[in-house]
Image (cartoon, rainbow, N blue to C red; front, side):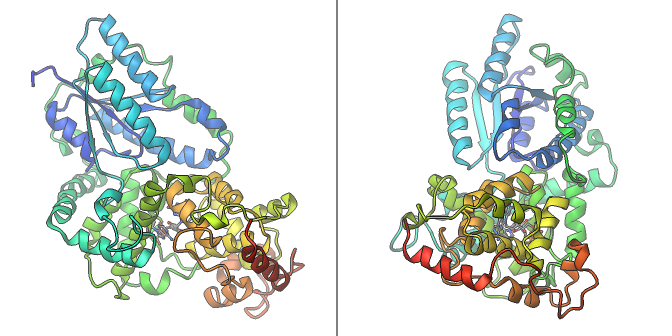
Length: 496
Ligand SMILES: Cc1cc2nc3c(=O)[nH]c(=O)nc-3n(C[C@H](O)[C@H](O)[C@H](O)COP(=O)(O)OP(=O)(O)OC[C@H]3O[C@@H](n4cnc5c(N)ncnc54)[C@H](O)[C@@H]3O)c2cc1C
C-alpha cells in the first residue's frame, strides 16, 4: 500500500473505537488514515417505530465517538442521506477534485433483513462501480447464525433455545472463538486506559498527522454540523432523562455490574433489585459488545445446567444470539408470526384498552408499574416485560405487533431481533414460545416476584401506602383476568 492510501469506516451499530474489528483492520491497513462515516436519512424520523429517546441516546453516543475520532486526528462525517447516495457523492466529489478514492470501505456486519439487503447493494456498488474494496468483520454477535450449523435432524436451523444453547456453548469452546475473545482483551485494555482519562492519542499510539482527516474531506460536508443539527432537531421530542452514553459509560456500567454477577442467578428475576447489567442499550448501538463483556468478566462455557450467576448471564446473551439467528433464518418474523397457524389470530384490538395499557392505567398494579417504568425511564425489567406482554396479548387480546411497536418507540435498548423474539414468545406465536395455554396471572406474578411490593411502590406512587398483602390486588381493573383468559384460550384453539 502506498503512503497515501486511505479508508472510510462506515459506522452503523458499532459506535466505538476500542476493539472495533473492522475499524481496527482498516486503521492497520492504512496506517491510521481512516475517516468515519455515518449516514442518517432524516426520513427515518417519521418511521412508525422511531424512538426519539433511543435516537437521543444514539446521538449522544455518536457525539462521544466523533470527539474521540477527532482527537485522534481522524474525523466522523455525518451526512443526511441514504448510504449509497453518500458513497456516490463522496466518489463523485473526489473524482471532480482529482483526489484519490478511498482504497477500502470497512464495516461490521449487520443481521437485520433491511440491513442485509442494503449492505449487499452498497457492497456491489462500491466494488463493481467504484472499484473500492469492501472489508467486513463480525462485531455484533459472538457466533454468527451461519456458524451454528443445523440440528442433526429435523429443521435446517435451530428453532428451540436449549439445543441451540448447547450447540452455541460447544461452538464457543472452539479455538477460533476463544482467540477472538482473547483478542477483545486488547480492546478492553484500550478502553480501560480511556476510562482512566488517558488521551486517545496516547492510548492508540497515533503517529499520523493530525489534520489529515479534515484535509481528506471530499466535499464540503452539509452546512453546519449535521450531527448537532440532528441532536437539536430531536431534542424537543425527548421525554426521559437520557443516561450517559458511549463506550466509556458502558465500560463503567459493566464494572459496576461485575460485583452483582455472582448473585445474578438469584436476583435477575426480582424487578425491585438492580441486579441486571442494563447493558442491552449499549449492545444495541455497539458502544460495547457481548464479546467484550465475556472477555472482561471471564465468562466460560461451563455446563449449561449450572445455576451459577456467570453461566446464567452467559445464557441470557445466548438468548440474544438465538433471536438473531431466528431473524436471520426467518426474516419474515419481522412482519408475521413464526408459527404460520397463528399468523391470522382474530385479535380484538381495542384502541382504548391499548391506550390504557400504554399509560399504565389497567388497574393491575404490576402491569401499571412496568408500563410506567418504561414510559418514565426508557427501560423495563425483563420479568415485567414478560408480564405486560402476556397481559396485552392474552388479557386484552391485542395483537403482539402493537406491543412490539410500542416497545420499539419507548425502549432505549429497543432492538428488532430480541424485541420480536420476546413478543412472539409471550404471545405464543414464536419459536420455542410460552405455550398458549400457560397464561400469566398478573396478581400471582406480582406476589411471586415483587413480594413486598417495592417495585410497584417505586412506580405507582398512588399505591405506595398499601400493605404488602393489599398492594398486588387489582384496583378497578379494566378487565377480569379469568374471563379474558377463557377468551384467549378460545382464540388460540380456533386460529384464523
Ligand atoms: C416482550 C419483550 C421485549 C423485549 N425487547 C427487547 C429489546 O427490544 N431489546 C433487547 O435487547 N432485549 C429485549 N428483551 C429481552 C430482555 O428483556 C432485555 O434484553 C433485558 O431486560 C435488558 O436488560 P439488561 O441489559 O439489564 O439484561 P441482563 O439481564 O443484564 O441480560 C444480559 C444481556 O442478555 C441479553 N438478554 C437478556 N435477556 C434476554 C432475553 N429474554 N432475550 C434476549 N436477550 C436477552 C441482553 O442483551 C442483555 O443485555 C425483551 C424481552 C421481552 C419479554
